[in-house]
Length: 229
Ligand SMILES: NC(=O)c1ccc[n+]([C@@H]2O[C@H](COP(=O)([O-])OP(=O)(O)OC[C@H]3O[C@@H](n4cnc5c(N)ncnc54)[C@H](OP(=O)(O)O)[C@@H]3O)[C@@H](O)[C@H]2O)c1
Image 1 (cartoon, rainbow, N blue to C red):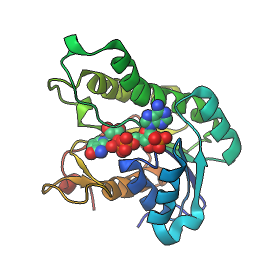
Image 2 (tube, rainbow, N blue to C red):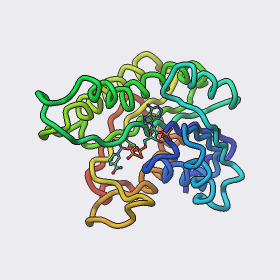
Image 3 (spheres, helix red, strand yellow):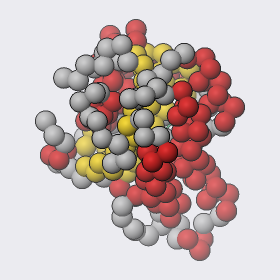
């Protein structure tokens, strides 16, 4: 098992569906995990759910989706060695011609812009050798009807990760694409082959560890069987 004792990891979106599995696995690997959320109740439930490891969980009520909010979070948490960003979520609604402009802005704000702000505020505090993992979904890869804002956001998020890696060669910056629906606390069962949030978390622990030295990669899992043991 990956050992992250002594490492301090920010999980942006760590109280979300996928983020809480990532948070739990990073704690199990020994890291100190910092999770911001706009919702205090979600943070309380997360701390209860992760159980005995929650003495290394630091929760902060605040919004990482605004520059001011992200800066306040950054200034209150001390040293951070790694970031995992699991922001956004899913959207499915209407064909392009019927999407209202405010809906477009809202989906892009909650996903792509939240990633941009997190990168803008936290990249400067990471030290040489630190890692930054952007969680993404199958919408980044596939085209289907009625998902334009989230698919455009997701594919642009891949480019954002590549650009972050090019601009910061001292860090290890990679995208992890979970290209199945993900099993989470609220959806514990599904079809054979679906990834779970805990699978994603174990792999995020590996990506943060010294065992993974690459940067600028897009790692795609389309089935749980593709995750290396
Ligand atoms: N769920 C799935 O089945 C699935 C499948 C494949 C890939 N993924 C990927 O996993 C990632 C996370 O998805 P999820 O399902 O876990 O989504 P989620 O449950 O909605 O959680 C998303 C997190 O993003 C944060 N967030 C959203 N908008 C924000 C904003 N404007 N400002 C600040 N924070 C904001 C939320 O923070 P607060 O706590 O402050 O609300 C929340 O914790 C996405 O990249 C998605 O593509 C998910």
